[in-house]
Image 1: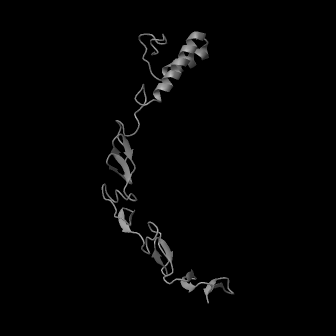
Image 2: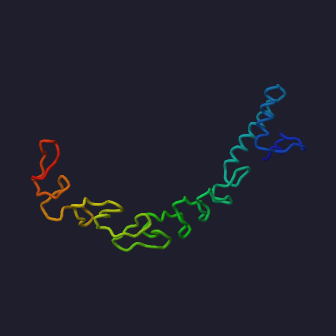
Image 3: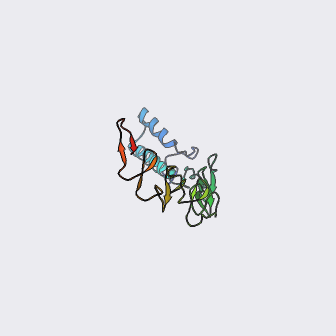
Length: 179
């Protein structure tokens, strides 16, 4: 029901979202407002405020992407806006920097044993990308099955070198050393 149908406005008055609040405040301040009219004004204001919060109803603006342009730096994808790091791939916002199925561009799928790292398919199990993107190994280590380890069995990383197990000790200066 509109404000005019509720009898809140005369035929010459225009219905606006703030109209009933203004009339309510003025009538309460000067004492000319009846209790029934005050209740109708408050009801109309509450209904108007509730309706305005629903997309596509009353005075509500549509959500971003639906009938409105996207903010600067974003792109439209179906009925939504994608962030600046995304592309619209098959109707969905997709971060092509780390998506194995859309690496660097839509539809560019990384091969088995590769991962998408900053938009490039890179092989895993390398010293630079051992267990994932940029999960690199120490220069003295190698990557084996997604784990960084010393190249020879029975060694452990100690003081930046691979050292036989049991030979990594804390020296007199408080640093680890291979002895």
